[in-house]
Length: 450
Length: 183
Image (tube, rainbow over the protein chains, first blue to last red):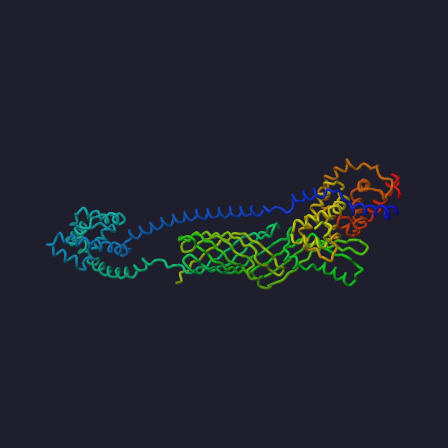
């Protein structure tokens, strides 16, 4: 064995320590084929998948909305028709018809009166409040109840005996002068239906007054335009990918609430709060800030041993470092939203995101090598974990660039918001650098505060 | 400035900025050393070059963690050995298949130990079985302890000692058989 220990081993060391095949140029050319590595293509694939999923959700959502809208339109038509067949809602119908008829009647009266100056009696009748009775009579006929008055023989009156939904159309088409004639005839011949039923006449007059007052009370509400939105609250949830340089991307999720306050017609300021999980892995590329922040306790211990006993070791080093960080963040985003179109169906947003932390966990592994004075190197794999709770506040850790696409649901809206948040500051105790791409789904509750 | 004019520590510091020019300089300075280490484990130059380049890529990425007062060469050797072993593990089946063809005892050695070339040494090593060869290299040449070798090769520490003894016996036998003596 002496030959081996004393002669062969030193010869091996000598030969291979100074080995050179003079092919370093070729070796370097080969290395350059792999280094620097091309940008990680996994991210765009993820991103395309997320975008495709978002588009599918959007299409499904729009289809559902269309169906709902159709149903509601049909429903509204039914609702409009239903009261007409019910005598209980006569007063509402009366109001609509009366208001239309009032206008038509007035214009018709003018023209009619000009043509029939001699018919003073009729004029006076028309001018009197009894018009209400006349109209009620008309409405009674329209409601579908056959006019019992035998004297009503005018075919034009017969037309308005049809159900009101048809009458509404037909009556509008009837020339106003003819209507006056018809009504006058009804008035003239109302000894039948109206007079025969004095309760109806009395009730109609009273009801008319009540209805009129209701109309006056209701009309402003109906005509009231929706107030302009000054502020809104939105809740959101999102999924996103955290990455840095060519390290593997990590999928994360979060949720929160935002307030939007109108600055100008097309500019809003948005601020809010959210909670998100942030995982990041550094293996291939470790940011300088992170590597400086890491405390390798095993390395420190080894260095301390060296300082205390300089003869013990002469070199300590670490290699193959990987760092995993897991943060539970409290996010505070502030951004400006600009709506380029009048419809305000999409917006462009930019701002900053600040963070504080509910929990932080850092796990890092590395190989620790110690070489002693005898030249024997010892290597051990090390894994260390650090945890901390609420710790510090980092202002402007990332910028926000987002595009929001709104889909209205009544007064509220649903927003798809793809975004990109490049790191502009360090996060957490270990100064993490995290870039984020993701998609927020937001539900916006619009408030009408002036 | 010529490659040789920059001290190692200075060159490493410049590489920390990611300057490809200085990385190339570092590569060429340590290329021979790196290839020598990897060849001892992988025998084949192509495989060794792959391991060398993978090791350099690791070094360039983690160079910020290198401490100025520590030996770069020792740290780099560690990276090289680990990378070579990883490479060997990944290509184990393939290398075993090759070995069955190539492991005929070598007979063309120089006449004296201190005259043995790299090629002669590799030829000698090829006569050892896989684990004997690894343990011999790790313990005798690269300075790992039996405990570390046990962890690295997933074998008991005592087995590492046994493999080393057998490797030495085999090498001694080969030296005698082929009349390789000190000049």
